[in-house]
Length: 218
Image (cartoon, rainbow, N blue to C red; front, side, top):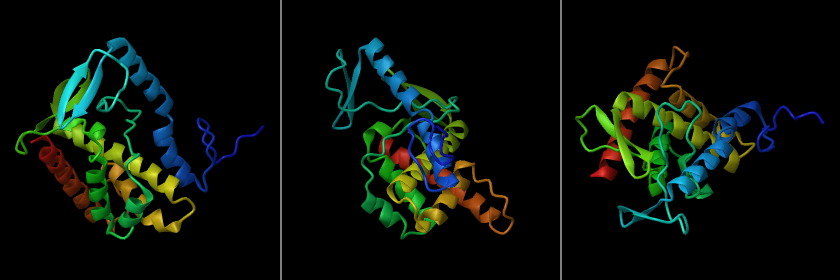
């Protein structure tokens, strides 16, 4: 049986065009392996991380998991699977009424409404370092220049997947999809007419994202 060119070879979901499939693959290609890795780590570590009133505690059991912060590995080129279950169609629709740069900023804030996605801690806006969650209730200090471009790329890929899954076959999302593609590629744009504006937007987004994590951390 010949595989449909627009079908994901992992989950067999069929898309309306190559762009939608491409966004989907960035997330889907590692979803199964990531889930298996997280399950394996939980079983072996026998640790359940629970977020309760903003405080992290650990229990010596793997049962009744409430929340587990996503492990963020800046050296992982395959991508990180963040949780987006709390983002509904109404919120996506509201984003499409905003300017693309404002929409993306609001989306990042919404992503961090879910505590499991809060895998970065920023305690000083003047510092060139932040902390990333590496599992087992441990945090590592890393350079901001290595953290924030990657988190923007990861969140861009998540938003692309959300848009194409919740509003398929719609030209309404194309403008936002184009914008998040630029953000996913570190603000790179080969269109001379808009490349300076896109690059400025990207730099601004990096600073705003740092501020979001700082406000959550403090």
